[in-house]
Length: 127
View 1: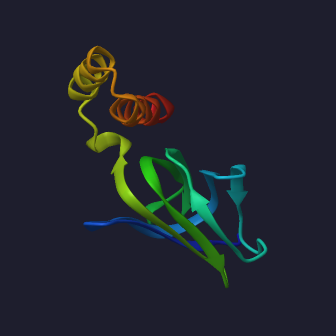
View 2 (view 1 turned 90 degrees about the vertical axis):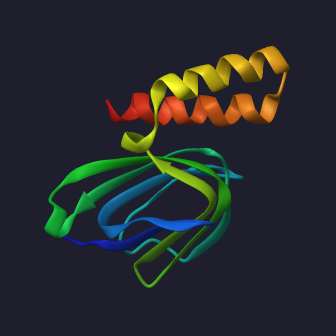
């Protein structure tokens, strides 16, 4: 099976690294799926869930992350997702995200509301 090497990196840490058969993410031009052999690309990563279909030593599975802005780059079967903030779905505290969403709505803070919604969508996608 063909694989691509994926690195999901936030400003403060390497969030996830490994082999995958498919990565789906949102870009400024819409949702994109990247598979081995994809044409080289460089784009703006929009906030939203990122889905990584894993392969290799860790076995076949799915990793879901909430990504908050950044860049996506693919060349030579290496995909880099460079984000301002990224959280794996299992790292997200659902109750805290729900409280943050409620507070953002009360404060009419659209940016905070969007971040909380993305966290909750990433958790829901992982279930």
